[in-house]
Length: 354
Image (cartoon, rainbow, N blue to C red; front, side, top):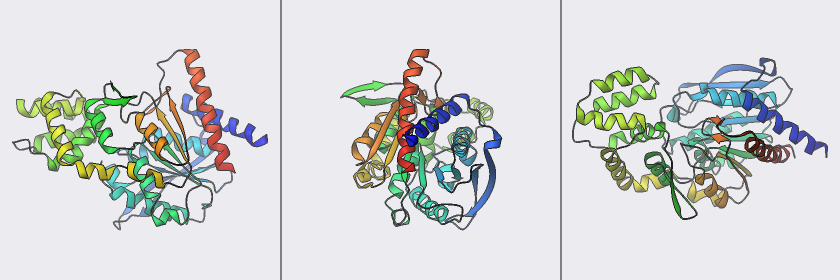
């Protein structure tokens, strides 16, 4: 009974902190360290130490974002988990920071997990591995690596993660996803199309020099939106017809044909990026939280993960989008969704405290 009460207090504090986006600095100590990466270079790693004496650990494995360990939403999550009694490690994963979505990230994640779990300030029996967005699928694949199998996490927590790379890429370009045999369509986040073209640029032949298009995409990735718009104005009409749809997400027929060709030519490569084929081999308990309004990775990916992973808990929340809680709902609806979220998080707490 005591543990159940603690679990609901944990859940309410988690939700309240996320909703208000406020965590007192008295609850954590934030430091920046470096670790030696797989490539031999020194790489930043942000740590949020809880003011509560603990060796319980959360390792956050990031998605594809140039913000890396400085991502605002990830930092908020780190502070919240520290407030709730966990030391939180947020290591930069260099390939993902460069928007490289290849399987090279699996090796980095397994390497990081082993390195962190061997630290003196970490209890290897109380580690939660938390995968965000694209990093979630990479984390699942890494969990089968000997470096994680030999000392597995207490649980894996996925937020906004994908299952099938092919359906994810189709969604971020077409905005289509299937529910009960019916095709649904929403406007995908423009970031997805940018990541797609950035990753596959070397495989695309536009029929003309692509350096100007690459420059626009790189400016968008560096969050230089004004410079990207200025550069677009200088493009030829044929360059504009490709570059503008990519960074706005307003895909046209010309860009769609390019996307279709890439999906066809790179089919085997894309299939190999998926974690779908290995989900049945996952032995860890997996908690899956996904926003029904996610415009980057559709919630149907979470449904697939839940169906394939032997031991999992799923919550598809209508409160959440890809970047956090949405405010576009009525009060009664929000209360019902909050109760569902609290129930999910309380289960998460009880499992990890056993």
